[in-house]
Image 1 (cartoon, rainbow, N blue to C red):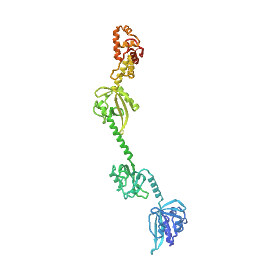
Image 2 (tube, rainbow, N blue to C red; image 1 turned 120 degrees about the vertical axis):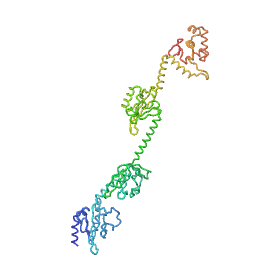
Image 3 (cartoon, one colour; image 1 turned 45 degrees about the vertical axis):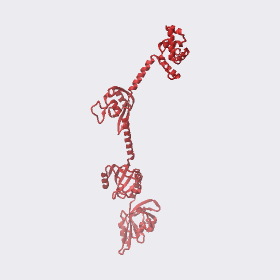
Image 4 (cartoon, rainbow, N blue to C red; image 1 turned 90 degrees about the vertical axis):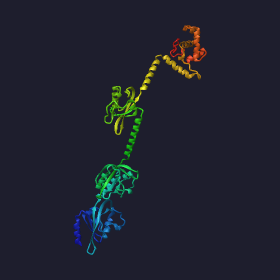
Length: 500
C-alpha cells in the first residue's frame, strides 16, 4: 500500500494540475505543489490533515449550480466513490474571503479486485484567469450603453443581452435569452440580408448595414446592425451583434424632406420673382412662375443648359456695372438686401427693382436665393409727387391757402346739399373785392382803386356774397380770416390782385 502511494506521489508531483490524495480513512496523505499553490498555502498541514479540516479551512461554492446540501460537497462526493468531472467551484480560505480562486475539479477513484476503495484523488485546474476575464467581459457588456446581443454559433441561440438592446427594442430579458435567431430575426429587411445570413452561419464578420427590426416597442425599428465573431471565455464561438438606432436620423431626414417640400411650394407660389442661383450668381438652377412671367426663362437668351442648370441671361441687367457691384457685395458680405438695380423684362422694358439675395442649402448643396421686387410704379409715383411738390412750392401762397382752406372746411363744413365755398372758385375781381373788404375799404374806395364803376363793384360784391354764402360785410371778413386771406394771409400780402 505504501509503495503504491509512493509511486502515485512520484507520478503527480510534476503535474501542472493540482492533485490531492485522500485515503479511505478520510486523511489527506499528499498534495502536490500545484494543489498547494492553488489554495495559497505552502505546506500540507495548512491544507488540512483530514477531509473535515480541509472543509473547515476552505469554503467551496459551486459556480454551475447552488449547493443544496453537505453531500453535494465535492469532497463528500469523492468519499462516496462518485466519479465527476469539469465541476467548477469557487474556493477561499475562511479567514481570507477576499482572496478567491476558481477551480475546475474532477474525481479520481481506484479500487482493488474486490471493488473496495484503495485510493481517492481530487484533480483540479486553476481557471481563475478565465472567470476573471468572463466577469470583466460581463461587466463591460452590461455597462456598454450601445445595444448589443451575443448569439451562440453552435445553435444560433442568444446567450447574452445588455440593457441597451432591451431599451432599444422593448423586449424583456427572458424574451431574448435562450431564444433562437429564427424567433428574433436581427437582419429583417437588411440591405444585404443574404450576405449577412451567409456570414452568420460561417462565423465571419457581418459588415454594417441598415435593417428594420420587428420589435414589441414599435411595429418596426430602423437600425444599423453589425456582427463581430468572438470567443467567450469558455471558448464558445459566438457572434456579437451591435446596433445603432436610426430613429433620430430618420426623423431628421423626414423633417428635412418636409421642410424642402414646403420651401419648394413657397418658392413656386411666391408672387415675388425669385430664382435659385449658383454661389457666384451666374447660373440659375430654378426660377419660380413669377420670375418666368416677368423676366422669362433664364436660358431663353442662351443655347442649351449647363450641368442641369440654365445660364442667367446677360440681358437681364441693364448696366453691367450694377451687376458687377451686386456680385461683389454678395461675395464680400454673404448676403444682399434691397439692392436697387435696373432690370430688363421679357418684353425688353426697363424696370426699377430691389434685388435681395441670401445663401441657402438644399439637398446638401449651397445656392443663392435671389428675389427681385418691381418698384417701377412706386418710383414713378414718387417722381410725380416730387414734381408736384416742386410746382406747388414755386408759389408758396397757393400751397398755404389750400391747406388753410381745408382746415376751415373741417371746422365749418357747409350745410348738407350745399357745395363748399372755395377760394379757387372766385373770379379775379371777386378776389380783389374780398381783399378790399378785409382792409375795411368802402365800395367807392374799392371802385376808385380798381378803376371800376360803383355799379360794377356792387354787382361783383353780390356775386361774392352768393358764392361764399354770406349776406353782410362782417361775415365776409370772418370767412376770409378762417382762410388766412387779406391781412390774415401768412405772407402778409394784402395788395389787390395778389390773392392766391
